[in-house]
Length: 410
Image (cartoon, rainbow, N blue to C red; front, top):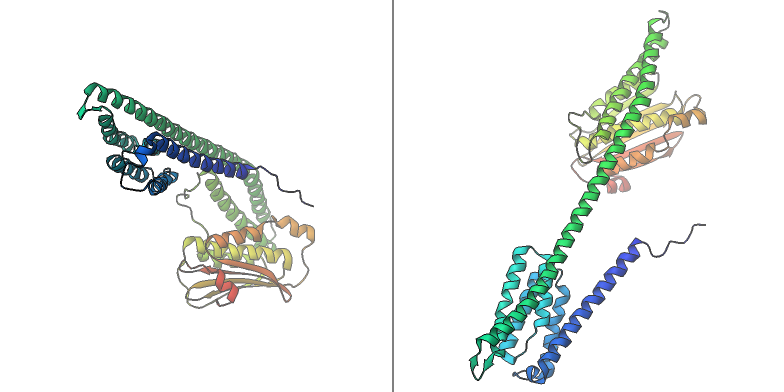
């Protein structure tokens, strides 16, 4: 019986933070609306040609756009700036709280150039309000104008500075995250290097000893034992191929993610004849049939086709026995290549221990992942008297999963 999922995981914390931030944004907008309406008073709200209730509703609608200030800071600032300017001219209403909130968003999200331009833009409504405040009997008192203007600019500059601090803090957090990602990648690369060294020390030594022993046994072999000599030659060839594959895999392990191995020669369909021939030389009944008009494939798709046959031949040896009849078939269509490998049991089968020794336990699973990565589909299962592995691979970048389901390919 599985345990219930843990509560309060990282996803729950993220959702809670997002919810609290939305609630905070709504609270800030409502507070700004109330502050500006209260500061304006009945004279400011009802001083124009618009009915007070309609004016309050229109102001609330404009203030509601502040909820979008984090996604579109410069647009929302322009909306609030225009609203501030026009309402001051028409109804003697000064919505400066909303303008300062929009200024803070621009300073916190955009570059220094945009934030400075937004700060300078606030001079227009602030200067108009300061001039009206310093107007005494139709004449603007310079000292009063300067005092009011300085106070408003200090408030705007403080708001802008808080936004810039948020901007710098966010950039610093981003750089710290990038540094952590780079350190994690370096740790992974170091671990891959360690694995590469261990693989080389263990596997390369064992395969080399195997090849040396096969070469020595062939040197002292009696002339009348051709079957034994052929088996030893197969062991030597398999050892050479295994060492080449090992070196290629070690090079991949040593390389950073996302880079291709320079000069790497991946096995593909061109090497399929050699693979089938090597299995036949080992005494197995293997044949290759190709129907349709062969065409070109992407290197990754061609490599996947080779791996399908390679894994299926290994499966045939494990489950069908060393004398199993194996038929490899390539069927070309206009849009796909069908690769099928069918084995029929014949003769004694390998014991469970022998089959387990040849298996990694992840052969077909890894093969299916490789086929899916190139846009293909794979199925494997028992058939009458044997086992079949069948893959459909795209020829022109078309996903082949639907072809496998409908049986249209091949």
